[in-house]
Length: 200
Image (tube, rainbow, N blue to C red):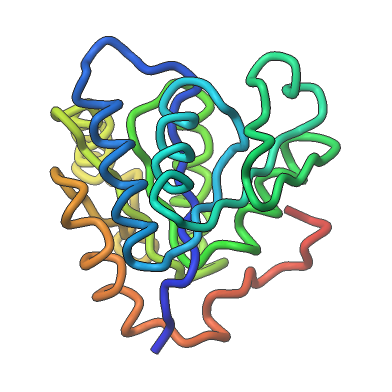
């Protein structure tokens, strides 16, 4: 059985237009702190990223931010995180986030959030890892993506042998329970990427 000690959360550097998004980020941050689960995130101090990290820290939780050097001016790193890692590029950022997390959660976000989520789904589909992946479908934000995935399945672009396995939660309160249930079937050795890190 694999434990969920750290969760990588992908989310927007913008707050979006629906107040429910910021509320969800803050609520999930509070839950992570209360449960003693470290937040691994993109390192920014604005948008949903900032709200999430602030909530974890405000409630005594642990935070690791990982940000590429070229984004430090745009996304204003969260310097008060206990650990802030500045990396060379996006590839190193994603690799470091993968290595430090036991599971992945996508809150609402833009193209960057979508790209990070889909890459994890792709790696899992190809058998590179078995870490749980969860889509937090706050206010039905991810409905278009979920519809697209079902469309791909219906048209046989997702072969049954290489299915995309992911979890979906409508409420932040359900995220950690779902991740922990999924992690029960994952051994510690199954969490490691099945290719050399320098090829990620």
